[in-house]
Structures are given as C-alpha cells and as structure tokens.
Amino acid sequence: MDGKGMDALLVASNANILYTTSRFFRGYVYIPRDGEPLWFIIKPSTYESQENVIHVRKPEEIPARLLEMGRQLPGSIGLEFDSMSYSDVERLKAVFPDAKPLNGSAPLRMARMVKTAWEIDRMREDGIHQAEVYRRVTRCYKEDMTDVQFQIEIERVLRLEGCLGYIRTSGNLMDINLGSVIAGDNADTPSPYDFTMGGAGIHPSLPGGANGTTLKPGQTVMVDMNGSFNGYQTDMTRVWRIGELPDLAYRAHECSRSILRACESMSRPGTPVASLYNKALDIARHEGLEDFFMGHRQKASFIGHGVGIELNEMPVVMARSRDTLLANMTIALEPKFVIPGVGAVGVENTYVVTESGLECITVFPEEIQEL
Image 1 (cartoon, rainbow, N blue to C red):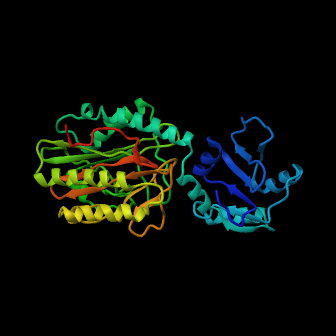
Image 2: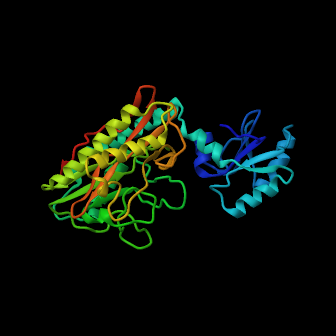
Image 3: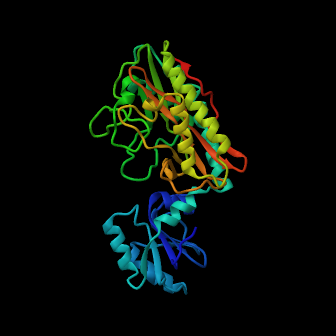
C-alpha cells in the first residue's frame, strides 16, 4: 500500500475494516507507516483486549491511547475521504488537529486491486459455490412465472448454498438486492445505476432488475446473481432462453464469447486496461453488432471491473482507463448485448490475471441454455 506522505492511515469504512482485519467491527484500524496496526474497537464489547486490540467509546480517545503505548502521534494522517461522510471526515480531522489530513482512499483502492493468495482462494471458493447454484437454475423455472418469482427461487437456492445474502458495493450508484434477473424487453429499460444492464425493478425506489415480466417464449433471461459466500465475491452472468430465439440473439451471444476469448489471451501483466475495452468494441463493430453492444437505448461505457470484497472494485475496464493489469488482479468481464424484442445476451466471468493470461474462476457452460 503506497500511502505517500502519510505517517499513518486511519481506516473506518466497512469494506476496508474487513480488508485490513479479515473481520468486521465498529471502530477504526490505525495503520502506522512503521509498526504494527492497532484495532480501536467500539463495538462489539466481546473482543478480548490484547496488544493490538484497544476498546474505546469514541475516536477522540485514540490519541491518548497511542501516547499511553509510547507511540508518536502522526504528523500526517490518511482518512477515507471517498467513502466517509463530510461530518465524519471533519470529526476525525479534529481528533488529530496537528496532523495534516490526506486522502487515504486511493492507496486502499490500489492495494485491494491486487489480491493475495489467500484472497484468491476465497474467491475460488465463491466461484465454485456460484457455479453450483447456476447448475440448479433450470429447476427453479416454472411455466408462466414472472421474472421476480424466478429470481426469488434462485435466491432461495443461493441462501441454501451458503450465500451471505448481501452484496457489498462501492459508491452510491450501486443499490442492488441479491442480484439481477433480466427478461425480455426489460433489458432495454435504462437504469440510473452503474450496471451494464438496467431493468425497471418493481418500484421506483429501486429502479433496476426484474420488474414482474411474465416469462414467455421468444425471450432471453439473463441471470446475474450473488456470488458472495465468505466476505469476498465472484461475478458471473449466464443466459437462458424460453423457446427459440432469432439468429441475431445467438450471433450476439457468440460474439460475447469471442470477445472473452480475445481478452483472456491478451490480458497479461502490463497490458493497458483500456485495450480490453477497445478490443471488445472492435470485435462488436466487425460483427455489425455495435448498435446492441453494452445496451441499446442506453449504453454502459465499460465492459468489466475489479471484484473482491466489493462487487465493483478497481480497475474499471473502459476506454479512458489509465490502469494497467497487474498479476493477481481479479476482474470481471461482461461484454453484453441487448436485442430489442428478445432481451439481453452475453457472458460474464470473473478472472485472475496471470503471467499467461486470464484464469477463469467462474467455470460454468457459456452457451445459451433452455428453460
């Protein structure tokens, strides 16, 4: 973690407390440039006090506790400007009045882009569980059910498989329940959220995903459901059909798979992230499918994203990205198409960046399957 100019970093957000401690509590993780991190815990009270665990009632107690331990107070401190409220940032500034406040969000994001072997193992476990759920998707379907009813049945299987029942996301434009089931023309409904596919949802307060569409012949059903089983997560999308589809839908779906194969082989450490997006767009254009690529009425400007503790981590796979791929990054690629009158097609996989290319950890058949 490169916290340039920071004597210490004070972690307060849920995701970064989990990242730095492998558990969650209410409180703060104090990470000095030199020395061992300290956990200042407000709740729960059941944590046993030990050398690195200090119980406090409020953050204002932290400086005195540091001095009691013989630690110097920092001359500069990183705070999570990007994920904390203005009032929380101002409060923590006041806790360390003599320290220069710096934005600690960027070094945390950069650190989380590259996974340890332990983190990758957790994500491999997620991929296995998620694939096992997808193997049972067809059994969840009943004739004349709605997309909402279908999603509820898939959610039941997810929970029985061990899914935590919660998708941790970054930012305020990522509200979601346990995932997304998009059927028919609902795939062409624009959404305010930063997802590749939209959907109207069932209420204006959560305008995304399944909207009560009755599943009927000639439609596709895109399933993009939760892959969180252990604090980390994988992201996987597959498509099912009801009856037969027009050739255009099959052609676009196979184009998505071709894009993934091209990205898999070219994505080695040092590869510009933007080149993956540009390759995908070139292939879609070559196939005459640009009008349907990443949406029809409203298009997403990216084809993938980092994934880990949060569903949407860095890097974002888009044309204006300045990032390069690094070994052991974990990214989800999701080149998708929306075919009016039919629905969404395409495949999403989660990958580990290796020296020889991308390794898929969401192994499940990619062809359009029949319900």
